[in-house]
Length: 416
Image (cartoon, rainbow, N blue to C red):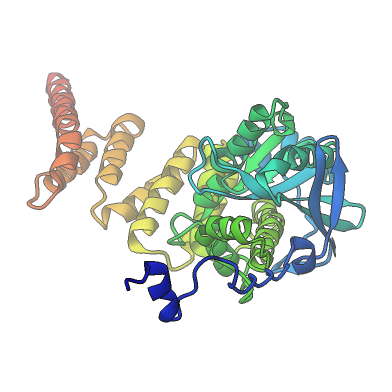
């Protein structure tokens, strides 16, 4: 007699249906409050999880203290934001976000917002965490409340990422962003300006190690894995991986404070202990030159040249120093520097000496000699073609004019 397929399966020991299956093992509960101690804050849009830490102002984050003692006037002038110099430090907010994506755009959430501010003799660091995307309105409302007394904002790449993202999330939720009214200092462009020549990277973690002298613990996690860790948390409810994310975010915020403290000291007293590298002196000199502070710039260039600079940067600094001296009316110092630069084949220095002898000394013969020497450099084999085309017409025109002046002088002398 034929047996059914069900009977055959039973004879082989295969169980049919779910009646005899063992019950699923209960998922181990690891909610965020068990992993990172904090509290739930009520807002008009529900509750949000908040983690807080307070640090004494003497707390050192690497080589810098959290207390900012140097004025911010140079930074404010460089950033074209006078409010940064005028605002009291207890109205500054230091902000960093952890997000569900690293490229921003619609659909990217800031699931963790770390923000700190000064509160009396302490630095108050607060982290707002979104356990589920549905809690975003509550997170944004709590952030708005925290920022209520603030007038200035400090971020790292915040103008390009954090602030546009948060502004978009506020708009999506039908709210006005509190960030729009704050004076904003983004430390990334400032770091690029100061350390482009000396450091191969200006990422915040690299600056921590090579500027602040800070090493993160093994608890840290790379920024690029953080979105994946959060999505894993949303799927499983297991918040244990979030502990490293909270640590990463907290260190980022503290590094903003320490970096601003260090840079403010560098710019307020560039000849002090905060600046030890010749390349940093030159970079600060460029900043002061761009701001029109030529006397300070020349001092910084001179101090920078006393260090062992890479050859290309050495001669570029000589060039900058010479033009700064020229603009200050110190032609004697400029001529000395141009003569030094001609020894390394700097075409501009030959041209400047030609100008000096033609217009200041009326020594057309000497001016012609420097022009001819410049032409010899430009026409030499191996001289860059693009550079040759930039110099050649001007030098030939200059030499022709000088020859006419020499001929005119000879004619005048013969007539006498």
